[in-house]
Image 1 (cartoon, rainbow, N blue to C red):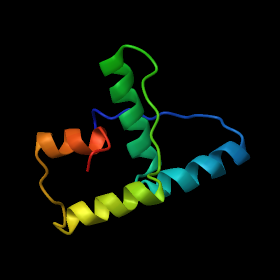
Image 2: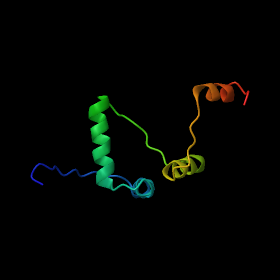
Image 3: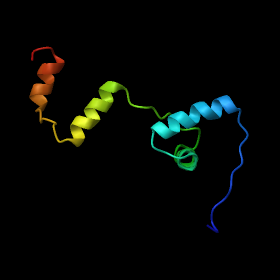
Image 4: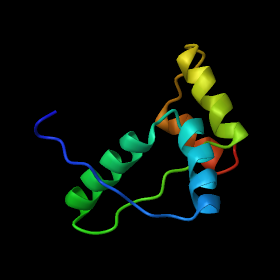
Length: 86
């Protein structure tokens, strides 16, 4: 802990409460979120990113992938789908 720094931030209660809800849904702590933010500031050399809670379609796709239910598709098949031929 000797190498850690403490950060104090003042923020209005409403903003804090809204952010807490999102941070919890992302499975993170406030410290995780701040560390992530600072790391990305360094990486991007500026204010870096937005993090989103996946929508229902994305959550379903993630669950499908985790369950091993993905199917392999060739580039030819993808092209047919893209061109509306499938």
